[in-house]
Length: 436
Ligand SMILES: [Zn+2]
Ligand SMILES: [Zn+2]
Figure 1: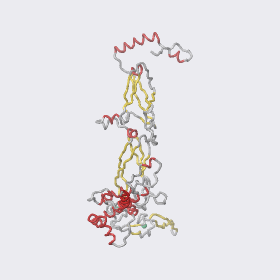
Figure 2: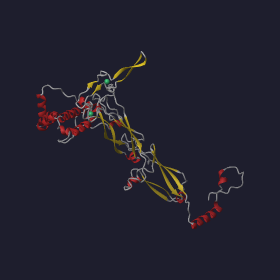
Figure 3: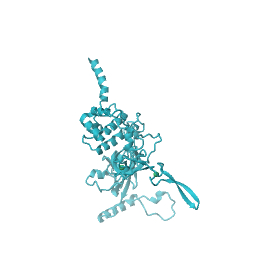
């Protein structure tokens, strides 16, 4: 019995895989989704599951790893990519969408059969209509590639310390959806009759009577494209691309260096003539805002790194001590770190801190980037504390008197002659400075 149910299970497994997933679910849209929503969903998913972006082998480089999208079950990216194209093409066409809504997959299959041996849609062809190029991202196929796009993103020091995600929006060229990148309202694109589609033409300039110079230049009838459009697309005005905002989320890893670059593959300006280049995000450190915004949130104000300075894996901090503290000791400070934990600084009574003295607090610097790559606990740099001593510029009259007499009493007894201590030869008259 167990054997038979096992056989049954084996038989149903491929059936389950073959049974196509609901098109709406596949695209992650509602049943009443608009064309625009369908396009948006296709744009997003087809890019995610594009086989060229989901190689079988896992790249060893850690920064590449996060661009891989986990696949569900046994689905390969290729299968999913094809399924997404199929779903989109069925739903974007009002006729087939109606059939699908009423009769489901079976209805569509019958409809296709009814039309006779039709052309099978190439999912890469559909992809290229959305993203330009040939529908592939091959870096070695000799395909034309658009320029990379560079943006600088300012991230507060706190985020470099804690890690996190930052979302930003840029305006970039998208292939016009209305004309699918043709630039033509009716889809009609003609070969330029001035240059015959070459985009270049030879012009003759007369330098002197009877002397001509031949100059090859861009055809101005078609602007070098070799194609003309009679009825320009109203959305893009024939430009074939439109500027639209797009949001990206960049993952800031703990301890990432300033100026680190994060690449979003093929996310630069789109163009029907090429495969989009990469969008390269350079992370720079945001200047801290002192108590400006976030004033209502004390925690954030205190931990935004206003008083921390970063140098590689170390952090620098300046601590101010009063004369009494520097000289007599017996003081403590709680420094709130970038993640809110407290670093305690202090000296017992009798412990002197010289002005400008530097103390290194080990392990309280920046997290060292990718030091936990092998599963080790995160390693940290050091916190370098510089002490600044501030002398009081106003003193209570009575206090001044007290101090004065104390100095007088003790300098007579144990005053140290600094000049003698310096070891310089005694040439001039006795020095009058002393320590107390
Ligand atoms: Zn032309
Ligand atoms: Zn257009």
